Image 1 (cartoon, one colour):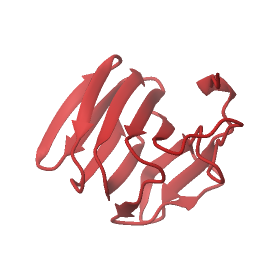
Image 2 (cartoon, helix red, strand yellow):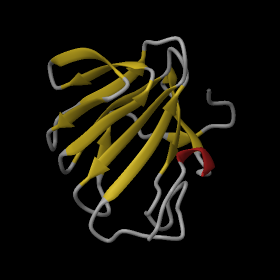
Image 3 (cartoon, helix red, strand yellow):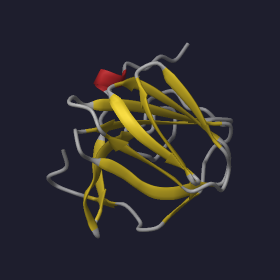
Image 4 (tube, one colour):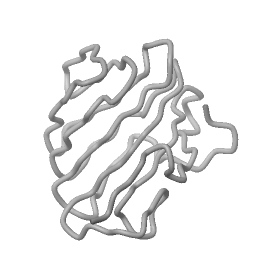
Length: 137
């Protein structure tokens, strides 16, 4: 059995150069050749683990398949299509395939999020492609 402790993942700092608040930490356990990869792999699912400092956001993008977005800690504002909601720890949100969405940490502490996708790998289209950054968070 392959297990992952999120605290042990090697996360990459990423951001979107046109938005100074679009910076976060990301890791992809079970996805070979991705940040935060682990010894165990999955051929049928993708998981992304993200951490957002207060005031930071994951910029608007679409994914080719449905995403289950789980808020593990913190409070975020999730925008999915034309709808926006403030949600906290223990919340599960369905983001339909090809629907523009973004997430912003509106709380006081670090927000930790998990995205689960029913395929591997997942193609995403970003309004501004994320790039590695040296000083995220």
